[in-house]
Amino acid sequence: MTNLEKYNQAFITALGVEEDMLATLEYQSVPQWDSVGHMQLIATLEDAFDIMFDTDDIIDFSSYEKGKEFMKKYEVDL
Amino acid sequence: MNEHLEELYKDTPYSLKKTEKQALYQRVLSELTLHHYSHCREYKRILDAMGYDPKKAAPLEAQPMLPVRLFKEYDLLSIPREEVAKTMTSSGTSGQKVSRVFLDKANTRAQTKVLTEIISSFIGKKRLPLLILDTRLALKDRSMFSARGAGIVGFSTFGREIMYALDENMQLDISGIRQFLAKHRDEPILLFGYTYMIWQYVVCALREAGTAMKIENGSLFHIGGWKKLKDQMVDAPTYNQVIREVLGNVSVHNYYGMAEQLGSVFVECEYGHMHCSNFSDILIRRPGDFSCAAPNERGLIELVSLLPTSYPGHILLTEDEGEIIGEDDCPCGRNGKYFKIHGRIKGAEIRGCSDTYERR
Image (cartoon, rainbow over all chains, first blue to last red; front, side):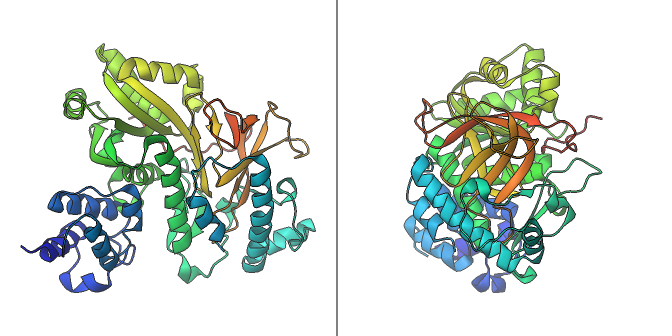
């Protein structure tokens, strides 16, 4: 699996959303991405890439697209 | 209208001294009062009825306060309904009305941001292994998400490799905790839970089992009411001491806040004092005439926050009793007022404190 596939799969697994929803997906834009879903998503991404987000980045991880920028910060090339 | 918050995020959360803070609060709160007056019809009617002129800047003590109970009776918003991103409800003991406050995206972010600034100033920016002194069940059924579950999720941001100390029957998983502690032996760990539940299901369970944990370097944050503990003659110093006896080398931080006021997060320091951060302030009112009480004089707690723009909750009169101990001179080095809480006033309705687990 490529990194982008792993990134997408984390959203699909943690939030139970379909792949075609990802591009426009934002925090609280679907019922599953609430605060509980958010922590599940963060944990899934951390496991998948063996990284650890800073607290500030967890808070600012507010959409699928925005999240991609953070992955760069943790040296994950998508 | 949140530019002042962006400025404050650049600094540490306990940096402002009295004069600076007074000037900032007079300016921003006057703006907030006018903002809510212009955007919330009910708030306007209250101020009009009081004969308050929001166009004049006023010192903090003269700014109008709303009783916290009002949020149970009315939906008060200063934004259009369609901009509401999150509705917060107070914990609410069963059978009672709960408060509802309405946040837009900016307010939701500010709330999380301020909590993060405050907690990180105690534990650092790195996320620590987190032991939740509660059961995973508190998170179940997200549509009925209790204040207790919300508190746990909110705090989870500061942790990693989260472990729940209680099983689904509220039994303490002593061997599981020992494994968790062994795995993280060489690092600081974080603990979180509700004041009374920790006492009942962790402290008492360990004492009954005749055993203790030996945490080498931990920080416990706990929230919730003291009523049931007071009934058992347990005060804060006793609580902290017993926690250390059964858990080990743990710094204990009680924190106080309420769903009705965004940004009001007050954390107990190493010297047992509750502290106001740059984002919030406290006044003590005499219950007879609502004049300001002197330091070390008990009265009603008025809470002030720079955060709420989506609902008129920037200045609230609570039903809790407290007293100010000092300002800018706590030996812990944090600036701002520090205080003590004495609990709910007599005659106030009984409020839940998130720890509303009923024993069957």
